[in-house]
Image 1 (cartoon, rainbow, N blue to C red):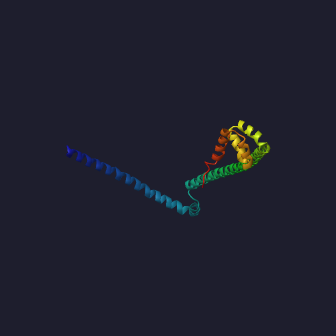
Image 2: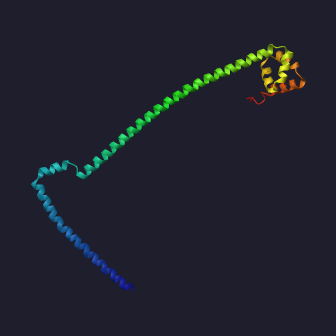
Image 3: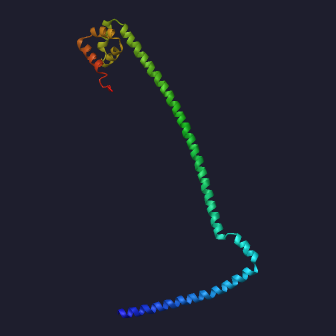
Length: 189
């Protein structure tokens, strides 16, 4: 059976070779005629050949024009994007300036409020300090220990001692512990 296959393959090869030879002969016979015709036309119009050689082939010219148009469209799109980015950048810069101004205004307002609150506490501390120690001690015993410790911590030691001596020993001890421990958590370094 393998002998038959080889014989069939050889026959197919010969048929394929004959088809290829036939195609080559047909192609070869047409080339000679085409070359003769082209030479005849070139001799008849030599000035036309000179003009044709200066102009690029139409397909290449069209391809270059299309590419140039695409590049022009892309450039226009890039210019539009750059303009949009410039507008966005200007808007962002303006917004940042507005936010900085608002922040500065807020800081000034907070500083005024903090200053006013500090001034109020200083005045109230001066009032407690000017009171008779016995009256101030009675008032401080009614306050929460943390609140009283804040005022006593701002007073000069002599005034604070006079008020603490007028308080009950439990209240004076509680306030003293708060005053002594309020800076315990502050870093040493």
